[in-house]
Structures are given as C-alpha cells and as structure tokens.
Length: 535
Image (tube, rainbow, N blue to C red; front, side, top):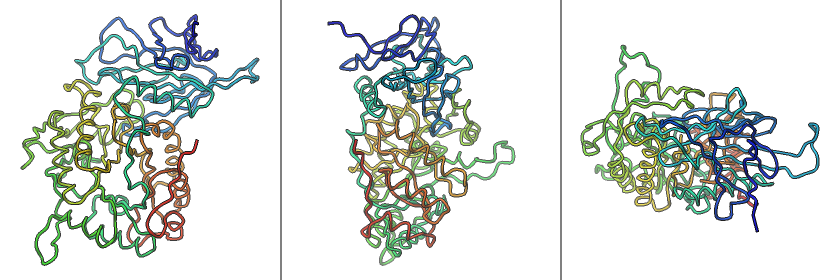
C-alpha cells in the first residue's frame, strides 16, 4: 500500500491535508517527510543555495488570506505574539507559527475540517533558522551561524511542519517529533519540576532592585508572614554579588545603561550580606541570611540570581581569585533580525565596554565553583538571567549555536551536581538556540518583566505569557513572573496566576501588601493550589 504524505509540494504549492498553504514555492526548497510515525502528518523544509555563507535568507513561498498566530522575539531576550493573515505580517525572529486553513467557496466557509499547521524553525548543525516575512507576502527562512568563518550552502531540516485538526495536539506532537529528530533537548514531561513551584514565594527585585541587603531580606519575609501569607520560597535577585564599581566616564557616549557593563569580581556575596553570627563569630554572610530565612521564617527553598555570563558584563578578566577562568573581553553583535525589531540598551552598553567571557572549556568550572559555594550556604537553586547575550558572542567560537549549547550543557551539569531538586529558573532566554539545547532545565520565565510603574504593560504581560506558553510550555513549566499584591493591576495579575499553573510569588516592598488578595492565593501553611493541565 502506498501512503500519500499529507504535506507535499505540488506544482509549486505547499499543500497540507489537501489545502494550499503556500504558493510560488521556489525550486530550491526541499521537502523531506517526517519519520517514525510522522510521515502523514509532519515534514521538514530545507533549502539550497549556490554559495557558502554564514547567513542566508531563503524565500519559502507566498502566504495569503490564511489566519496565523506566531511568537517572535520583539527584543533580544523575549518573545511576544502577533496575529496576521499574510506573509508580510510575519515579523523578524519568528520562532513559532500556527496557521489555520479552512475550506471556502467564493470567500465563504463551507463544511470541512479546519486544519492547523505549525511551523517550527530549528537548529541544524551550527546554524539557527528563524522565520520572517517580506513585502511580497513571502515567508522567508533566515539561516545564520553567528560566526563569519562558519558557512554553508544548504540545510535540509530547517523548519518542521506538523498538521492536524486540534491545534494543541498538533503543537504537542510537533515538538515531540522534533525532540526525536534533534535529540538535543527533552520535552517538559520528561523533566523534573523543582518543588518550589507549589509554594508561595517572595522575590527581592521590585522591592529593592540592586539595593537589596541582608536586613531587607529579613524584613520582607517577616512582613508577609505576619499577614498570614508566609513565603516558603525566596529569590534573592540581582544585588548580592561582588561586582566592580565603575565611575562615570564623561568620554563615553553611551551613558544610560552603562551599569550593564559591570563585571563580576568574585563568586561570593558582597559586603551588604556580611553579617556576624551567634557569639559574634564571623560566618559567611550569605549562609547566615539563608539560615535565618529557613530557621526563623520557615522558608523551604532559597534561590539566588546570576547571569549566564556571571553578571551583566560577564566576569572581570584577571580578577583576583578568578584568574583561572581565563576570561577575555568580547564585543557582542546582534543578529539582523533582532536589530530589525528592537535595538537593546544592554547591547549598546556592552558593544562599547565589552563583556568578560569565560571560554567554553572553562565555563563548567566557573558554574561548579559558584554553585558549590551557594549550595554550601544552603541555597537550593538559581535564577539564571541575561541568557541570550551568549548568542551575540559566537564569532570565533564556532557560532551562536555552538557557544550557547556549550554554556547550557555546562550550566545543566553544574545544576545537576549541586542542586538535586533541579533548582533552576531560566530567564531572558527566549531564543531557540537555548530552548532546543535544554535537556534538564524545567522552568522558564514566559514573558518580559512585570513593570509596576508602566500602566500599559500589564495586559501585554498577561497576553504574552498566555500565547508564549503555547510554544514554551512544551519545553518547560512557564513562570509568569512576580507581581505586586498592592497595585492597581494586582487582582488582574493574581487571577491570571491562579489559573496559570505557575509559581505564585510577589515582589512587594516590606509593609506594602494586599493580604485580602494574597489569602485568596495562598493557604495558611504557605502552599498554593497550582492549576493543572487536564486535556
């Protein structure tokens, strides 16, 4: 018996379940049927070129008059959603797209199944693919290595397509098919979820920003506990580490954001966290803070923040006690797609000042020394931020995919060694370089930050999380971020998290709480009732 693939190219048309999705498909576009059961529902799209380059843009065909939803990176760090009906509506850096096709006659819908087709641009070797549209309504594949010396003239598995009548099942099946094909990541169902997810938490960020102190941590935990909503997990965010202090340089054009070029100078806590223990003996400051949180406030899990590169500006080259990391300055370069959407102030700063990059061969040692010290202080996990900066540093390191994968493998190996509950929250990380390289990391921040001072941001925040979760939720448990319980949008944020299946944690300033709202979310013992997927 001959089985006819349900995705094929016929007379220049890309046809899915008998419905034309793309027209004008160029001759250099190659379709390869999916394997191991995906033959009739999935296929890979590839492309060939005459020249070797480190960056190719391949037109894939014309998309017109079909509704779609996509997730794209509007910033270097984060995705959000966009809807449209033709190729020119597809933004740069699209990493997920779901197309709806219906049977119509004369513009009117007729009886027949609605087919949903998902497009997943992938990693192939040292190259990463993303989708974008042009003014001709063509969908394009942007294929790049991020290293001028890493070139190719083809890719045979650049985009995976999967189709069916249930969009949620289509997405789930597509990611699992890609998992089997790539073998570089694991689906969320195969990962260990850290235990903090089922407990109410408090994060220091919006309460103190980088001015967080040991005393502030104690005040925040005490304030929430006294109101009947005791935090059982704590995130000590940016502000605890040893970093260099940079005086303002009047000769530097990029002044705003210059703090993002600050570099790590040691793996231990800074002077704000140095405290004396009982009987006035000197103890490690962070250990004392963690012990206080766990013993006096009954906190179960303590996480601390660090950047994937160590700090925003990386690790200071030849810093005392850190010489063995062989850190060198590197200057980031954004991909054209990211620049086409939104330039970034962090990149502006680092392109001037440089980032102290630990070489891939040394980065496990760096993570292991950092994490083993944290574990010795009683810390249970880490929030690893600023992750996508690594994609901009691939030149000279085999490209963005190779460098990112090296860093993620080292990070996950260190997490496994030092934090047995798989204690990691992945943040500022919405690139497929990292997503398709994560075999272990199980929690991902699902949108840009909660911005307490930006009234227009809150509906955008919640909608972005919801749509991004369609894609990200196949890889990790989405994290909806912290929020303020005493805020004009507090009920909106609280209700969203109540149904989101996510961790519930706030970043309230000590003494500024809405306990009436919090008691609707938090049980007296500090646990939360997390929504579960049932379909």
